[in-house]
Image (cartoon, rainbow, N blue to C red; front, side):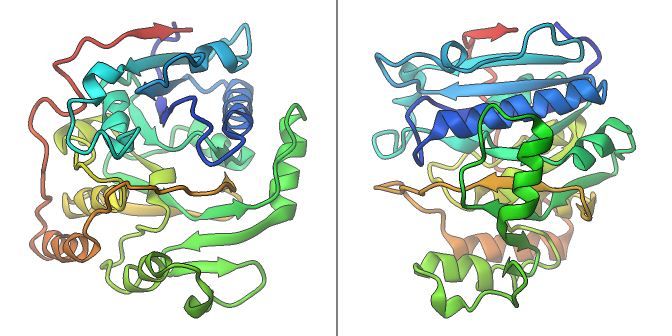
Length: 319
């Protein structure tokens, strides 16, 4: 076990091939992140919350290749079994409650700072180097623009080659003002395929009081004390826009928003986005409540003291 972790990276996952080629994407995420953290001597942990593992399917720890002889990085698997999942509202419609799962990891993370992210993100070397500089402030919360890749990132290549691939082939960047195609003006919203895409990239971008909500589920970083004080992500029985709620909550609590830029990047590996019957969060209510939080300077704390399944003894394994 690694002691005195500076940062905990928290992700949620299950071995259900979400979006296609999931294990390929997660392996690249894990291998590249751990390699860069080791290279920077960054004391950290990767917390993987495996929510509602599919029956008769290997657990993630059994199918992912974890580098050996890690000196600076610990890996912590936490399982939320089906017995807990099925008791939650809408459990028959949602195989995973992503943000309750995030809270499970955040609640149990050991790092001084906690970064909620996703298992298909690739961190640039410059970003990890910045994190290793220990220049983070407990008075701030940190966001970042997300660069999107559509082509599969090659597996098994050195991290330098993978990052070079990402830098060469990214096609879109998700900013506070909306989504921008590479070397183009902002996206023509009429070309978006779904109304929800239009809503997220136009209505939200004009109604956020300067808070960077776009793709916020892929990178939200702040001191552990604030995660605990704010009781984590709202534990709603829906699947969309909960990351945006958390940004409003952090900003209205008095924390200063810092948007990292330049070569400090995250890259998102492209995949399909099946929604099925998963219920949506009310976008208009989110924007209304977010505006109210910002105007009053008062965060809306939705969870009680048991947030993150604090009263549950969950199976876990540290590597």
